[in-house]
Image (tube, rainbow, N blue to C red; front, side, top):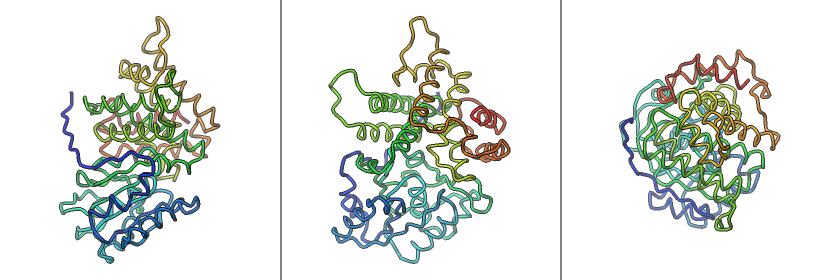
Length: 383
């Protein structure tokens, strides 16, 4: 078993209407804040409610919402420079993964005397951080609890991981009401991505007793959210269960590691601005089939926990096949793409994506020893 070190730092709040208490959570950390806001929230009216709630509490803040399709170093540098000139005391982030990654950069590097590109080139921050309060508007966030920030390096249009301090986020808030702004297709693809986060944390070489426990519980909760319960004892709504399961999947990934579909989705998002959840959901069934070659017992066990019924006399291999088929059926039901070629990508595009993903240190924690060639094989199978 790999070494296990777990530091409990962020306050994790999963609660309906927690967004209305965002100011309460943040005010203990300072008086002047940068609010890093996903611009999509303006189109659905959620941004106004967030801003009004902070204003009614009398908080001093300004909004940064110039967030591109993929979080990149140029945007992070601009946000960081603005934060430094404004002499803020804390950061509030409201949005999906790309928004929160920009906010994490501001919090991590605010007191450093170097710019973002020094850290993109491998420097490690050594100074204290700004407090960060993050409100997740989707029910998972792959990197929120990790000591890495995933960005697109604007100089080469490729994925880079920036090393940051442990415990960067002080309070992580998951509010089920925030997912009401998602379409059914978005909800399904993010749900599949949450399943993949938990599953690949379970299959990782870095898996440990804590990540296994959290991943298993995430699988149970996500199964209840998506497929319901045979009994009437579960009274929580689908949205509440999705946020609970997604939060647990994010914690499992931070205690273990991302897997092939999660890492490749980040690389695809950086280079071609394809949504992380969509890319991950397409690749995940093929990652299951790949992982089955090396971790068949764990794949079969996770499938069973997720609710894939084991046929009488069935083998672990048949359970893994049923798991991959189940994911594909979910995507097909919502008319979501099943192949990467449906996203107007070429095989040549995928070669560069595999190289980008393999250049990160997360490649060391895959289910087996992997490199750009093995990642490319998964991408080709998903093409």
